[in-house]
Picture (cartoon, rainbow, N blue to C red):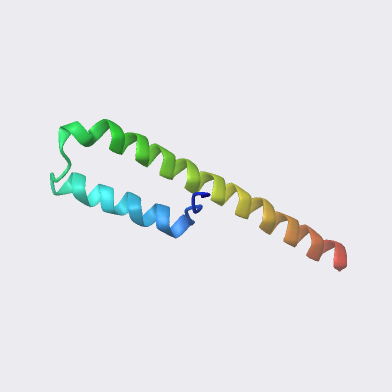
Length: 68
């Protein structure tokens, strides 16, 4: 079964939830390493989605300029 790809919004929400846990001191030191790895993964997902969106928008704008 294939893993469902995270959306940008889902990744952002999960990072927000983790931040709240850290701020409220709800994160156990034993979970810290796994949590930091998860946040790094979520940040990578967001960065990739932003880059992909930027490329797509640039392509659309270029096509619009060519149509003029």
